[in-house]
Amino acid sequence: MSWLTDFIPPRIRNLMSKREVPEHLWVKCMSCETMILTSDFEKSLCVCLQCHHHGLWSPKLRYAALFDEGEYVTIDSVRLREDPLQFRDQKRYTDRLKDARFKTEQSEAVLLAYGNIVNHLAVVACFNFNFIGGSMGMGVGEILIQGAYCALHHKKPYIIFSSSGGARMQEGILSLIQMPRTVLALTQLRENAIPFISVLTHPTTGGVAASFASLGDITLAEPKAVIGFTGARVIQETTRQPLPSGFQTSEFQKDRGFIDHIVHRTKMRDTLGKILDLFDPS
Ligand SMILES: [Zn+2]
Image 1 (cartoon, protein in one colour):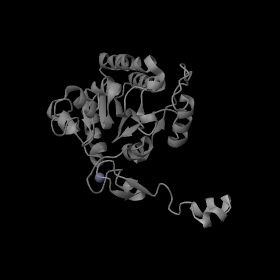
Image 2 (cartoon, protein in one colour):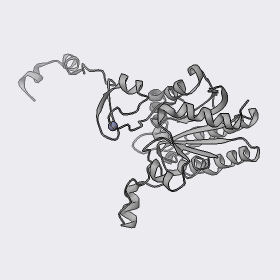
Image 3 (cartoon, helix red, strand yellow):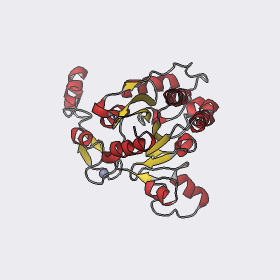
Image 4 (spheres, helix red, strand yellow):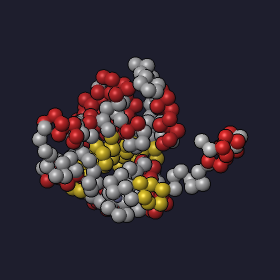
């Protein structure tokens, strides 16, 4: 510390150390680490201009580009009793929820909506990875099931955009129960011939990849998204075997029959429109 800083009163020092550049002016690509102006990044649908990596995209921005004229209606979720285990690690779980709600302006990690996609009404659920890593707890499970019942009631297709680290550990077994619950809800759609389209975006892992996200009648994915159950590093350390190149990417999974089609973000709306047209050509 220099003699100068010693003599600057704290309030003035705070003013001097304030960032002149707004915090969210730049975004760093998760893949090639190029710094991109946030406005340019959002204009390119949050796809990196250098390496075309499909970055995290909030449900609200995705819906604005997905639905006809950017118009949709959100479906409010049922409020559940939160934090039944009164979980605390470095922070209280309730504080993590509060922070995530403030950061994302969403009540949970999934936003449920319905609207027209190229003139076809569909129910859509979309994960927000910035809400506690898009983790699936009781709230997320409940919203996904609500979406399935809404699709069932109106006899309209159901689309889920997944982006998740898996189960929400702060809810213990109650989060794991959401795997069979969501699968059962989708079974009801299948029994009533209501199509379910699963769209896997970066990253789709853990309990989400291991449950409903793998059960699409049609499964789409964004390019180069990480899709798998356990992280590649953990698998490599456990098996002590080198992993094949491109392991757990959309392209790798498509080559093995897990994914039907890889769709660039700019083509997603048109592709979904064509698929919905097959089911409902009227
Ligand atoms: Zn990049």
